[in-house]
Image (tube, rainbow, N blue to C red; front, side, top):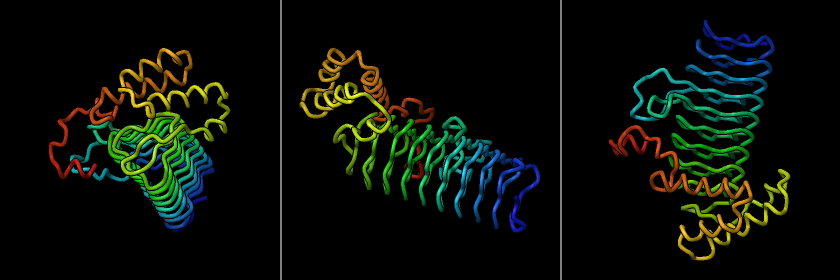
Length: 277
């Protein structure tokens, strides 16, 4: 199942039924699980663990060094779960010590052509990242989120669960769960009603989230007052608690980004290095 033109370095661990196509390169610290397929010209390097039944289309580069000037060659890793699809020319960079040392992708995700997943990013299960979307370092994409094509996501942003991000948007703050966000810079424009219906959310929950959207982003009330009103009127709905928790976490971070609270280095110690994230 390994093409004779593929280069498999000594130390690589490859399941017996994995398929390694022509002109692929697998580094010495790579582990590839059962049923995974590398079609052609795929490079998997670094300390990278790939689970079962993933498909990598031509010219993906997985586990490459971070594009971060603060990176000093530390022994970080890339971890990929099961059942994911990586289309042509996707790049996934490994983690850094500053960000916890790991870039992680869960199960059953679709990463479309020419998308980039930067160092220390986390993509949870069943997410879609569309063509030419760029995730900066330390980005989190929560379960069932959909990010449309040509979206730029600033470092340390979180895209909440079941969120939908419109095409060609630019995120420099967290995108709330269950909501549609779009534009440059992005803003909340509604509830991801179609996605929630497809995933079996009851109408009562969707209607509660619609009222939350109206109160939080349409009423003109100050944010603390709007959040208190949502808590009082809809706090019994679990999804509303998730939404409120995400908004509070964003406020506790910096610049509306919850993961900023986890920074272990001063903000932008080197302007050029910060741009590279």
